[in-house]
Length: 304
Image (cartoon, rainbow, N blue to C red):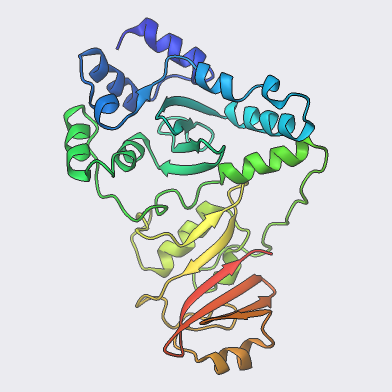
């Protein structure tokens, strides 16, 4: 890759950070005439942030304090990440604070919403090309030196990362002068067989507990999404799935296979009820359980 171009991209797009090796390979392919990214996936690599500068600036606010606060909040997020590419409806950015060498990729859509696109550049490009055809995108990535391994359920690889969307929201309320209340962290370390202890604990800590519960090798990938983290990287939502390892685990008093009447008898007065589900307020947060054929088959625990 042209070193002068790399320097320009680092300074103008990545807040002075060096280009991850995967981005260098994308640019090398582009310099050799490969147009797959733009012609087939609709992804254009950035050499500047003119597009973002036009869409996120103080002039757009036109004196509206809330809009201006929103722009400032986005700008604070922009100082954390590095935008490197975009499509007609979204932009892709590396989150260097989550990992400085192999950063995960976050997507900013046309509505100003953030969501994780992949644990690394390869997964992000692969998922962006899903509509085209996974096989064709996978083969192209391999051809430019970016082979992709096993791709799991959407959200599985990034579930232990902080929520960039929640971070932008937190910045917004700080900018308008009404900071959000800080939720305390969980008092107990995450224990494998007590999922209620996972709420408001660091994502990497919960990851270790989950790996142990599922009897996976240390540092193994988790192939399903079980949790979601807040802006500080603490688990705020748990989707507890029924597996051979979890079917007998008690979550705040709930176990798979319970009948609705057993759940109420064990957990007390419901906070809310709906068609096939009941929610309860427990010490760890809000517990929602779902039923199929009068057997509990869904457990979700959320921080209050």
